[in-house]
Structures are given as C-alpha cells and as structure tokens.
Amino acid sequence: MTLPFARTYNQFAVYKLPFAIRCLAAAALVCFASAASAQTPPAPAPAAPPSPQGQSQTKITTVTSLVHLVAVVTDRHHKFITNLEQKDFRILEDGQPQEITFFNRESDLPLRIGMLLDTSNSIRERLRFEQDAAVDFLNDTLRRNKDMAFLMTFDNEPEVIQDFTGDLSLLTTAIQKQRAGGGTALRDAIYQASQKLITAPLPAGVDVRRVLVVISDGDDNLSDHTRSDAIEMVQRAEASIYAISTNTDWLALEGDKPHKMHETSGDQVLEQFANDTGGRVFFPYRIDDLAQSFQDIGNELRSQYLIAYHPARPGSSGEFRPIHVEVDRNGLVVRTRKGYFAATPSGGLVKSPGGPSSP
Image 1 (cartoon, one colour):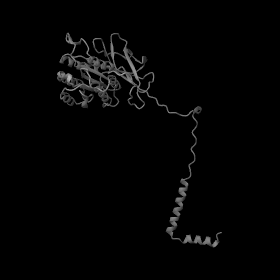
Image 2 (spheres, one colour):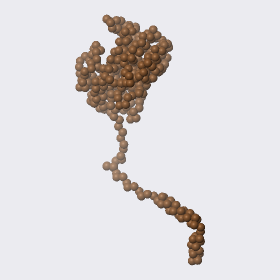
Image 3 (cartoon, rainbow, N blue to C red):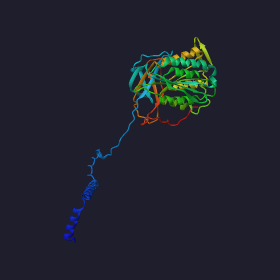
Image 4 (cartoon, one colour):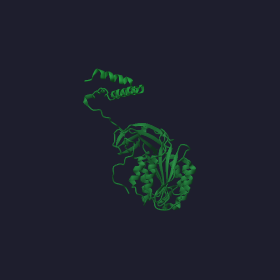
C-alpha cells in the first residue's frame, strides 16, 4: 500500500529534478513508444484470388528461333542465277515443307572471313603463289569499313596470326611472312576457326556472311578433332567452307581449264567440308587458275539469296535439324548449309548427342 504523502513526495522529487534530466527522461519515453509501435505487426495482406479451376499459375518459357539461310543458285556451268523470286524456292526441314517468312536477293552482306593457310611441309613448293593469290583475293573482296577477315595458319597446330581486321596492309604483311614446315592439323584449324567466326565483331542489327577459305592439300596427320567435330562446329557458326586444293596429282587441262581426273583422299576431305557447309571446292593447276578460283569465290559471295523461316515443328535444344532447299526450275543447283542446331533457351551452344565420328 502506498501512502498519500509518499506519492506526493515522489511527484515533488521528480519536479525538483534538474531540467536537463527531465528532458532526457521525456525523450526516453518517446523512443520507447516508437519502438513499441514499430514492433506492432502490419495488417495481413488480402489473399490473392485463386487461379481459375483451382490450378496453380506456372511460367512457361518457349524458344522461337528464326532460321537464316544463305543460298547460292547456279546452272550446270556454274553460272550464277540471280533473278529468282521467293515463290521459286521450297524449303524442307526433316522432310517437311516450311513457310518462308523472309526473302531477299542479297548481294551486299558484310563479310566475316577466316583465311586458313596450310603452312605444313607438304605445300612448301606452292606456298609463294598461294600467298600472292590470297593477298589478291582479300584486296578484291574486302570492302573498307564493312568487311573483316582474320588469318590462321596451321601446320603442327593452328595459330591465329592476324585477328579480325579490315586493314588490308596488316593482312598482307601477315600472309607474306609465313614459311612452310611441320605436319598438318587441318581439322583442328577448321574447328578453332569456326569458333572464332561465332565471336566475330558484328554490325548492329545487320546479318553477315561467315566464310572460311581453306587453302590446303586436305591431308591431316596431327588433329585431335574428328572430321564430324569440325563440320559440326562450322554448322554451328552458320558458315560455309570454300576450299582450294593445293594437290596437283591427277590434274589435267581440258582446253584452258584444269580438270581433276581422279580425286585423292585429301581432295575428298576438302570436297566433303565444302558440300556439307554449302561451299565449294576448287582444283587449280597454275597460278592463273588459283587466281581465278579466288575471283570465283569473291563473285559467289556477292551472288546469293537470304532466306529465313520459323520451324513448323519445335525441336529439342541442341538437336540437329537437316535442311533441303530446292527450286522449281530444271537444271539449277542450290548450295546452302545442310542443317542447323536448335537453339537453347539461353542462346548458348549445345553439343549434339554423340554418334559415329568420321576420322
């Protein structure tokens, strides 16, 4: 029990405290009240309405890929046919017709070129005029502020001698400095060069034409990658291989043009690389023939069709989808890549399922 005079005494004692102490006490009471208010739990949020038919909401992610094709059409005499219309083309994917959503007679795409120069001992006698012809090709083909190329040599192993550049003087100097010697790692060079094409500098919002120009006899005695590995990487890079054989065995002249009487194993390797990627192989005999081969490549890169479509059937990420392109005119040949790898949701590259590998 508290006596009345004790309560009066306590009130008087507080009143008699110094003014500063009374201010501190008041502040403490305010802080205590604020803390108590902050600890008061907020009112619960209203419950979200149930989804229709009691189903939980699930985010669905789909991948829609536009497949781009660069096609070249020639007659039986390798003359370019450049006046076709969209209605003249038919695209089959896995044997099923596809609807073309974009078509253009494109002769002005920016180029990204990988120049692969065989510097192994087997091409020593022909290296000098190969270098001269390669320089002439780049001078005739690369357009200032638009096209870019890099130089890779390969003997015992591939090596990038000059990175992507549009500077012809840098490329010319790099090509002319090379010397021959060592073994051959052709498949490794094609594999690594294709990887480099994937990361090529690109102009914003513009398609480019990716090309590998391979100068070699087709022999390989040092590569770690198989032929199917190399072809797959070229297809992932959406590139074409134009191969120039340095092998003069079984070559004969028919009029003014060289003709291959019999294809060596190296010739067949180069031909497979070209056919599977929508390119072409050349068998020059003389220095003039080599220069003409480079000129034909340059002309072909300016005589092409750009076609695109959305696949009618969705595919698994990383799945290889074979493509066949044909035209409705007799006697014409269409060259384009043989297929593509379905895109992943992240846009990365996925290794295709393992299968039999070619040596």
